[in-house]
Length: 320
Image (tube, rainbow, N blue to C red):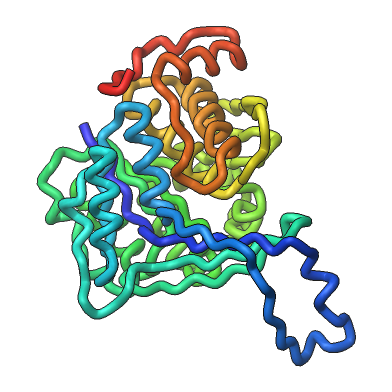
């Protein structure tokens, strides 16, 4: 049974600036900023929210299907996915654009300046859920071109596929009416605490009102864990303690991958959140969004160390 992910695929260009941005910004000249930073090292990583989720879902033995275009330079990403046994059938290459890309510069105080080039993502709305032939257990509608998010959510609803709505960075692009429509189509709404506050402000719905339109609201809280709310229950998920904090980028995508891989296997919501938390911690402990590794035995042991019990269902893995 497959997990469909409609979201971005991108190349991440990661740069570390060995100084503080504030040492180079003149407070009285912010109306005419003209800066150039010398970066000693550049790293190119595979990224994008759909790619990040698919990577961790596959580590957990799941079957992700990514519905997202790649650009004229996307063959390397396709080869990478094939290497990790991630299907590329619905990752078409377009000749009109380069693959989406994120250019991220981080200073020594962990401040970031980032730019995102949409690239091939402009064509995301040309893809259709109706072209996916595999049986879909659950669909995650993650950040990509706004029109694609709306279209793919509607198509999943037409196919009676349960939807996870993850608006993320596209919250500012979606109107209140579009947000309300997609929340109403979804079984799950997931966002971090800042994004959830913005959703409440844009829709005029507090959490109680949101839960009259969707069944489950998941709020991630970074290092403080997460909260899962239904109309009848609240589950507070404590975080899995990291052994190091190398890079928090991609932790949210790993959490989603863990949570919804567990959900389609029949875990209860408490355990879904805990699986998500462990998956997120592996991402935090490694630089980049797709560089963490674990076997199912290692993952289960980490889960037991944190939560004191064994997951009731075995997570199959060919690599275990």
